Length: 442
RNA sequence: GGUCCCAUCGUCUAGUUGGUCAGGACACAGCCCUCUCAAGGCUGGCGCACGGGUUCGAAUCCCGUUGGGACUACCA
Image (tube, rainbow, N blue to C red):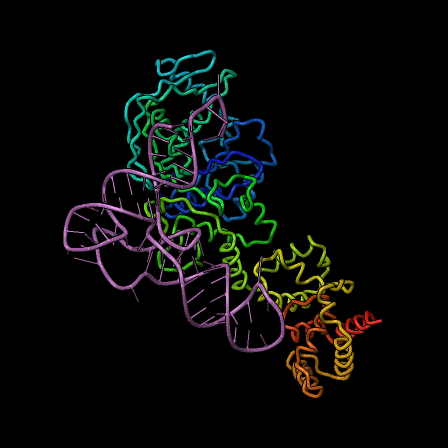
């Protein structure tokens, strides 16, 4: 294990922001790449937002993305590591001690009840691992409030104290903190401590280039969890925002990312969030996954949508899932695509009814039903032959039978390959459904 | 306003020390396949923000302009 120690220090806001998730990911990647330690620290000094639910959302989001941490609260009430506590709300004594130290050394002073830090009025250069050397003038910098009138310490103070106390060697954080870094460096210096190396990663922007805030579409990791995205796909997409394997690949295994990931090659410019590309990557992961791998997620989504009964027929489920899987990219689309396989009381798409259930359509459906009722084989290949034979006999295109059939047995105009669909539904169910659809004619 | 950062197709990016038709992916358009499709296959259009330098030669180095972003709290 190397001496590298990095951290993700989110504040519980009620969601895990996509930008925060990427910051966590990059820290995690760096820790795993270097064999270092990934620390989780909860910055819950804002009492108003600090609820157990909000903290739980952070845990579940990180776990979902597969970002395991080596130190910090584990999410079950326990914590690992000897640099704790890992909740800032439990570290008040430590902060008070540091403020006291600054006060006694004359590096801070009381002003109208608050404590201010005497910021150095000298130029400084931040040597950033990603951004390079950045110069700040500082000669006009005002003194910094480090403790409020009510006695609570402010972010800059607690952040630095914790990074120092927790022995962090690298601080990988959003570029929005670049301008804060001179203050943090000054604090480290005042404490007589060696600062960590800083690496400021570019921000994730909305598609229109504006700053992505919690309300914006796609901002919450919880959304992806709810919509049935695959965590590996979301993680893969996030890796590609600011980092690249440089060999024209988009889908890349996380093990390989860990191997190749490093700080200096991270992009310096902000990246816009592209839901389309995430969707595409998710589809790549979805279609590469086996039915067995996808089953837990699929079952969860389907049962949540009341499509799949608790005691579902596994073999039937697998058969259905197999023909649907290649058509969709998102587990969240499963209920819509699979409900009629498990329910007989599906409705009919009105637009499709108008277009397909014409007198001629009903006529063809009746002929088809009649023919299929007499066929013994009901596998997709035999079905295809039957359809084509009937079409040839009546001098029509096979579509003239397929469309009414699809609408009859599913209520929809789109779906999996029809022949495969009928095979999976089986002869009895197919005939019953066609019969029911024919009733609509009257 | 001040300080700081950034600038290759619409978007994400490759282009490591200046010299291969600026490559890939998503999206888009068209075509093909076909029973439908946010399915599959093929093809295509699309870019170095602008202006100056340096150089035999600049997407690449320098300066400026413009544009975008961050910070500028007794929020984090």
